[in-house]
Image (cartoon, rainbow, N blue to C red; front, side, top):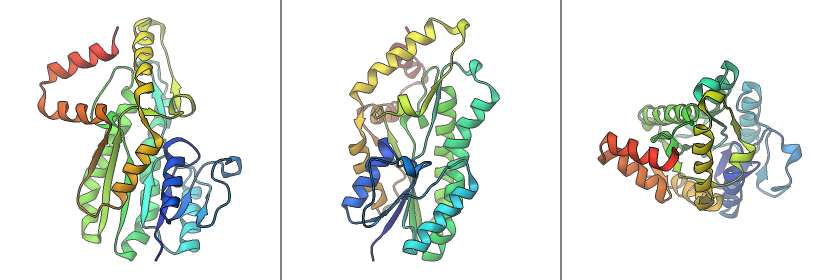
Length: 268
């Protein structure tokens, strides 16, 4: 039987690449997005649908899940990819911005997961792939709210895997390093406060320079597919020399060394 994958945030970047990759592998693909009427990349294809899904809207989540189940009767893999980044000094963020960061990256991810779990339990298995980041286990200045949301995703996933193991449902974390997509122009908001300048501006400009060395969306899609088809109990899939190096440093290096490295890389 042909397997089915549901992807959030599939209109561009990693989500689009994942939809393309799974479709090439012969899967039924539900490439969900907030505005499918604006999709110019995927178009109409056999074995592919584009449900309208906004992770901050519970009604659209349930409607999308119901559409997939009605069409194909199953969801073998859920890929929680939709994400948003709020970058800049924490003090500059208002309550609405802080809440949006968590509504998209954490509460939205949880809501989609909760909507899919009943069908996976009834089917006796499945995989939940959460697109995290090296930001989920490392920290850089002026990314505090984004880090907080990704650390929350990491803790949620690590605990959830114990709850779902008895039902044959696997939980995975894909943790890319820097990525060459339009995330930093399409899915990022910047905030600023004069008291933090020019230091914050210099630091963020330096971080931007690293993105030209990032992983391609296609390479990340390959790793996500590997995680989705990996029947082992492996939880984390760091991707890229930067993500793997930071993961190793966090586990073996003294905190003082990690802090010095972050200052060297990010703070002018």
